[in-house]
Length: 506
Image 1 (cartoon, rainbow, N blue to C red):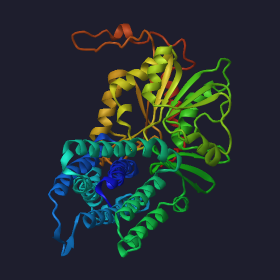
Image 2: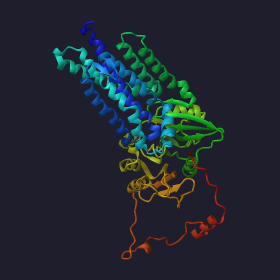
Image 3: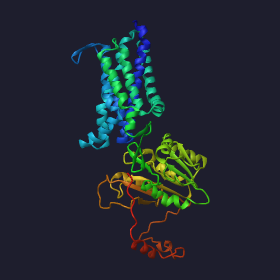
């Protein structure tokens, strides 16, 4: 075959390689979220584990010479085939969610490795660095088949097709494939493409190497199949969530990215933190004459306010598959007409609401699934300022943070500092009434709710000092509005039996 006739073939090889590298990078980012979170710190480690080996792969591929390698003779073709086969073999466990559960939740903890940055680093070193290094050699190896007379033109075209492949791996795999066929099947496609590349490069289509590669692709398809996902109680696995539904003792639980998000049963029971919000905020306005406007950031399974047919709800979440899943598997019913679900990013929605002058009587922040799954952009001063600006006068904001109840650890203190810098005089309440005051373990985390009541013309008060003390102007002068003196009410509250405490949500 003449070299000129090889040109479309070679560019196809380069394009597919570019797709597989970028798609594998994004799959690694997406599939490690349930175990190490989605912060920029973990994402940066994965990106670094792709870019640097890719650079070394370019250099190594350019220096390759036909000869003895690993105890056998290799030319350019056999080197490409070897790289594809070894890359697929290493990526096979690295892109399998079933293997990841064992690796992150059993293998590494059994070794005493529980720090998430160390975990993701080990994962990248074992399953990302080598495949990317080998695949990165593809462009310089393939360049041996091109004419050297038009080097600059050929180099530009090779980089073009490689970048187009990377573009497709970045955009097509996430926006199209992950949302339609699922993350698991998107991973299987990468192995099909690697097998296709190897067959394209092989002289003998049914050689031992080809059969071995097809076997790897077959195993990948099997372990990432929808049947295997169903055995793990997975109802969908898109670019946002690995969603599982578990039924225990009649309670239907929605688990998102390995975090127990929502629960509902036929009696209307919900997680204690949801029942706390309903008892304190929803029940008093459930039978009001004028409907209130309520915004829920973090829809979960739409259990909060599900039975309320009076007030107007907007549930906000970035995952468009949540409503169908919640209605079919958790609620067993459709959302009422007074409830709207918007698959939109929270800060974008709040920015649009401000432009449109839309404000709310109650905003509930429930997008914080756990210690590892705290969206970084929803924990800043700027975000809380957006929330504050979206509250009506006398409007309420409540949150659900899973943090240390007694401020052990930097996270709980920093969240408190940040929130109070925007919304002074908030209340901080333990949902189960326990604060673990004598426990120094920063890993003891429970559902904590911040409560803020917004006032347009708010008087923040002053600081009393020995030099300037105006408490005699500020303290109540009479108790005409109280049914009983406060001290009598307190005595009645403390002398009775203690209320039954709700169990902690998962």
